[in-house]
Amino acid sequence: MTNTLLRFHRFLVDQTFYPIALSSLYALALYAGRVLGSGLWVIYANLVWNLILAWIPYAASILADGIHRRWPRQWWWLVPPGVIWLLFFPNAPYLLTDFFHLEPRYGSPYWYDMLLLIVFSFTGIYLAVASLRTMQRLVSFHAGNIVGWFFAIFALILGGVGIYLGRFERWNSWDMLTQPERILADLLAPMTDPLNSLRFFAFSSLFAGFLLICYLMFATMKRPNERTTTYVER
Image 1 (tube, rainbow, N blue to C red):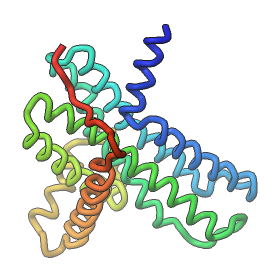
Image 2 (image 1 turned 90 degrees about the vertical axis):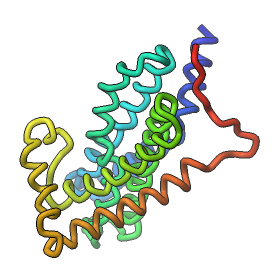
Image 3 (image 1 turned 90 degrees about the horizontal axis):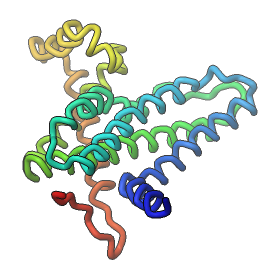
């Protein structure tokens, strides 16, 4: 029993679960403090929902990693959690765009609301980085490091586009399952008329670039004497 708990603990450490959980709890505590102070729960309630959505790709990456460790050569078992991760990945960095709602409001100091949004946004970025790092390692294991980095860059570009579609076109990740043709039309429209779609290209590319910088900063940072996690065949 002790060995099982220790292995599970090490697995969670490898997924950077504890700091992500702490950051999420801190964000929720800040929101709860605002509700208690103002008596209003509606204001910034969207942050809680967006945080829940941001946890979905992270949970999918944990599931994929767990499956891989159990069956390291059966890559096809990674497809279902991989698809879920890809669909919901933009939800994690999407929390950054909630700064659109920052303004002086009743019942809370402006600086408190700013800190609230910073913590939720930081948690979203952390969830995105952690899940992408796990998925990149899995792709690299099966297809090589070069393909792994192409996959990571593609996912970050997808993240920038997904954030745009969510913020301005108001699409959700699950709409890809129910209305894929309409989302595809919204994606193709800027390609056919790029001069009148500068906001799409500017927003998507700038956010994708920012996500790439965040990923390189967080995902490549190692503590002194920290060993790099590698997958080995059982």
